[in-house]
Length: 380
Image (cartoon, rainbow, N blue to C red; front, side, top):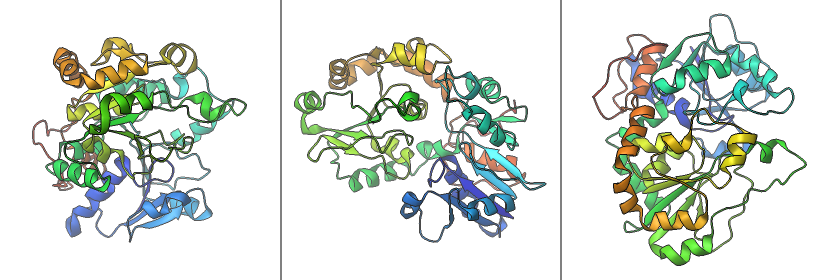
C-alpha cells in the first residue's frame, strides 16, 4: 500500500501528521503495516521534516508520480496540481478547521478561475471530515461535495487532550526560552484575501498591535508569540529586540496552543482549536466591518457566538490581557456555550475514529487522552 500525505502544500503538520504518526505507532499488527509513506514537502520546509521520512518536492514530477501511484491520499487542503487518481484509490480530505469565514463557493469574492481550478481536486475526494455538527452542512454546501462527510473531530487536536500535553508545553516553552512565570500570549491573525490576491495593493502584513504599549503596560512578564497564517507568513519582518517572538516557522501550531496561556485572534479557525484547552480567548477585530461585509463574509454572527467581547483597538486588547482573570470569570458561561457548539467532538480520539473509517478493525492508536465519548460519531 502506498500512502501519500499533504499538509498545507508542503508542511509536516496538522491532521495528516497525526494520522501518519498513529499508523506508525500501531506496529506490525496494523492494517497499514508494510505501507510506503510519502510526504509532499515544500522545498523551504524540507529541514522541518524529521529524519527518515520519505519526501518528494511539492509540485515536482516526482510528486505527481507519487500521487498517481497512491492507494491512499491524506490531505488537509486542496492539492492544486494536475494528477489522475488511480482506480481504487481513496482520497481522505481532513480539511483544516471550523469555518467562520466563508469558504470556496460561499466566499464573497475570489480571483477569476481560482474556484473552478480547485473543483478538479474536490472531484477526487472520497471522504471529508467535519470537526463538529455545526460545520458539516456548511462544508458540504461550500464544496458541493456529495460524498460522505464524517463527524470525527480533527486528528490534529488529539494532542490537546493527551496525557502528554503538559510535557509538550514545558518542552516548547523551554525551547523558546520562556520562563515558567511568564504569561504567553499567542497571536494568530488570519490572512486577508486582498493581501494575497490583489497584486496591485499593499503586500506587506501590517502589525495592528501597539507593541510599545504592550511592552510598557505588561512588562517582561508577558511574551507575545506571533503565528501568521501560512499564506502570509513571509510578509512581516520582526525587528530585533521586539517583544514579539516570530513562531511562524514552528512546525506545528498545536504545540504552541499548549505553550500559550491565552490567545488573541481575529477570524482565524485557530479560535475553535484553542478553545479545547479551556484557556482564555480574545478577539482583535479591528477591520470587522470590511472583512465580514466586503472581503470574505461569515457563516454566523461572531459577536453573538464569541466567548468574549469583540475588541476594536490595540488599547482594548492590552487592557483585556492585563485584566484577563476578571474577564474570564465574567464570561465563563459564554465560553462554555462556545465549547459545547464547536468542540463537542474533540475528546482526544479523533484519530482513532478516522483510522476506523480507513481501516475497519484497526487497533486504537493508544496515543490519545480521555476515554469519554469514545463511540464512533455519526456519518452525515
